[in-house]
Image (cartoon, rainbow, N blue to C red; front, top):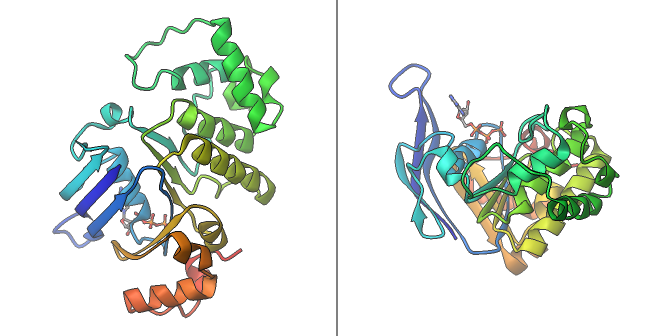
Length: 266
Ligand SMILES: Nc1ncnc2c1ncn2[C@@H]1O[C@H](COP(=O)(O)OP(=O)(O)OP(=O)(O)O)[C@@H](O)[C@H]1O
């Protein structure tokens, strides 16, 4: 489904500020893989996601989504394959547009771009049903401007929009980090539901090790621009924070003197 080979990305090459963000990432995801991604600050997690989404191109290597080489495909063109939710609840939705208008836009993924949207009652009923699932009382607020909603409500709608037309790949970049714990839990449970119902191939970056262990069928850990730990299936189910730290130390040669300084445990 997703095949990444020898991906390299260096920012400000050949300058005193040179930063090798990706140093040969290899990663293959099977259809339906739900992969949690952890790693210390600056290990390359967001850069990897940005390369996959086409925010910028890698210097070397290839990215294939469902057999299509998207490595140098413009971001707006490959957007038809990808659903994305960012850390910032203000991103991903159009604040000045109504809830229904935002959802209508999302329902047109992969179709020709058009700003025109007609409120077909069948579509409105579909949106109402989908909003009901969120359990946030939004099903009767289709005409509310998104900008007036709370961060948690907005992030839930962004998640809904990212999955309304099932994407080939769902990218979640610390999408609950800016929410209070209770709301974060709700959005994570919604994530789990949407991913398993749609059998969505998903990459979810998190700084929370418990969430990384709790969700998904596979976990990868990045360090200095590489994937250093990749655990799946039964082995993933049996992982504990302690065994994960040991795996990391073995694979990277680095020591976690203070794990909490690198990753949030709670
Ligand atoms: N657009 C950019 N321009 C310049 N440098 C960048 C850019 N994006 C990332 N970097 C640098 O590349 C390195 C990897 O950053 P990246 O954001 O991918 O790490 P991360 O693992 O997502 O970290 P965090 O957990 O802190 O979000 C860092 O040194 C960062 O400063």
